[in-house]
Length: 176
Image (cartoon, rainbow, N blue to C red; front, side):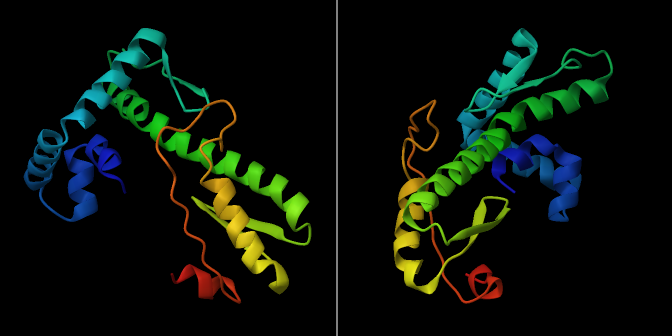
C-alpha cells in the first residue's frame, strides 16, 4: 500500500493494517504528513476540487463524481473525501496499464504476432512468447511501456521504469 493510500485510510484503518494502536497510527500519519508536506496539500487540493467541480479526474481525464462530498452525514462525506484523494492516483495507474496493454498489443501485431498477451495482474502483463522472440519482445515491450508517449493524449513528465522478467512458466517469473 502506498503512503498516500495509507494516510487517507484514517487512523483506525491504518492501525488495523499495521497491527498497532490507533494512537500509534495517528502519530505515524502526523509524522508522514509533516515530512512530506506536499502530500497533505495534494490531499486538500483533491478534496477542494471535488467540492468545486463535483468530480476529480485521472491522467486520461476520466471523471469520478462525488455527489456526497458536502453531505451532512460525516460518514458519507469522509468516504467521498478519501475517494477523491485516491481516485486520481489509482485511476491514473489503471489508465497507464490500459494504454500500456493497447500499445503493447499494437507492437506485438507488428513485431511478433505469435506472442499472446495472457493476463493483466494489477500493474503486470503476462505474455506467452515463442522462444525465438523472447529477446526481441522483451526489448520492445520495455521500450513501449517506458515511452513518454504511452498515453497519446498527454506526455508523461516522470519516466516510467519497467522491469521485464523471463521464465518457462508463471511461477518462474512471478518469484522475481
